[in-house]
Length: 223
Image 1 (spheres, rainbow, N blue to C red):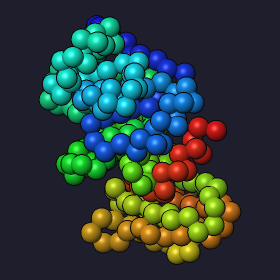
Image 2 (image 1 turned 90 degrees about the horizontal axis):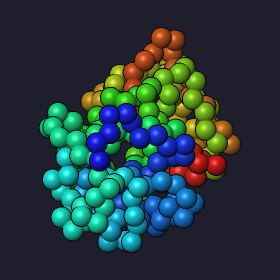
Image 3 (image 1 turned 30 degrees about the horizontal axis):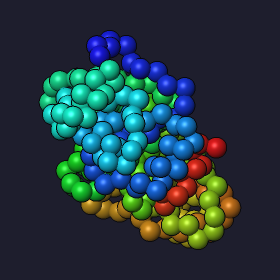
Image 4 (image 1 turned 135 degrees about the vertical axis):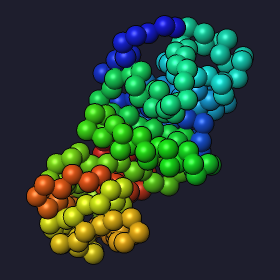
């Protein structure tokens, strides 16, 4: 397949890579009718679980030959080593939301590359990385963030870039007035203590920060 314009999807897309995949959660989302797009060798894993992707994107160096032949009309080969297969998949598609499985775990360098991609596409594409336990995403670059979660839910804030907070509500350990920076201070292993978590950044703050919560709450993104 030769495609110059991005492939457009109206629904959230399930992106699948070659790392560790939360199969029970992925299967439940496939059953909801969400489209599946594989990043290169992610198609091998999907085949093992009987899931057919609508599209397979990447340099295809990790794709099993037989699976490639069976899905010849669904292949979108993008060569080059300047970006990852994850990024190739993101650039080749347009969707309101990407739920990305198989890009965390297994190899730590791949996990770091996935976090790099979150920053690279921040403000352009809404991406949620999901592993066996957790989900991680970057809130939109706005001054106030809020989310409704059950009391006691584990809630972590991690600064990918330096960022300063004005206040927070609904957390056991408030972020009021805190400046977070890797190597200095982070906000992991907090707990939800109110029905709504609210976090406000100090005026003018643009640093990228991640929210990490249990993967089961991915349902909040697809209601």
